[in-house]
Length: 294
Image 1 (cartoon, rainbow, N blue to C red):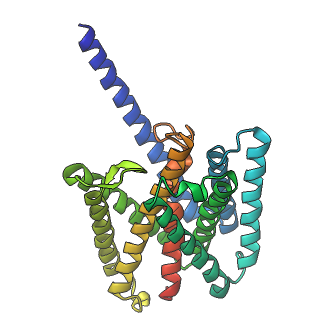
Image 2: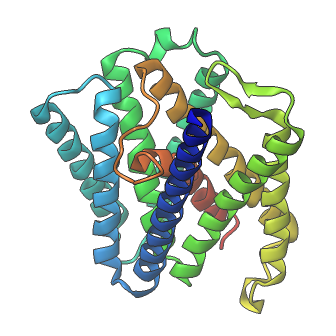
Image 3: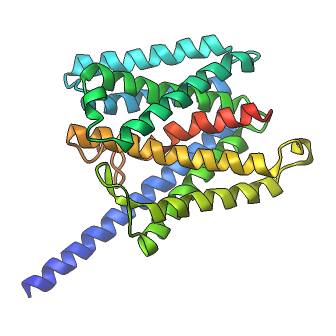
């Protein structure tokens, strides 16, 4: 009887957790869609900055900042950096690609270094494990993601462009989950995230590529200059970056001895646990669109 009760209790707990996850996800999706389609751009940029500030609040303890003044100071540094980038790029006025492209390029270069660190972890922790380096990593993860998101909002059809970014990342994530669950045999990065497999990785990449093909067929005529090859390459690079973002944050969490970045989102963990993929995908996606003249 005791075993039956425990099993019933576990099922009830699992259902409650699933309900929390679904409700939180619906709230996040609804808020995102309402924001990108209806909020004025400056207010939306400020809202994204607040989200990035919350991400910085979660990152600070993983970088070794545990006291309230330290965490507040780090959040303030991130927000000041976002404001400086906003002014530098001329957001709110005529945005110049000559100013945007170098920032996005540096962001993508940083993610190349992150790839090397993920592949060589835990040995690589000797290079980035100090407090100063982890604080710098937080800046390089959060600020370019915000910068890229605001740049995408300045594009024609801003809401649609942002939705496409999220769709590509979601396709890669969902494809990886189901493919890995069905066919997963070989660990992708056992030292960082033992649950991820190469089979799931390729399933996610293929899902993103197929979505890229589908979205290309739906493009209006005024975007005829965007070739199918370019659309697929942008989708693929965005999917690859999303995996790297996930693994990089997971690596830092593992090094810090934490499972979730926080408990801010019921059933999901912290904000960074949901946005880690987008942090790498956004600059990659934005740079890809910029290079093909979208």
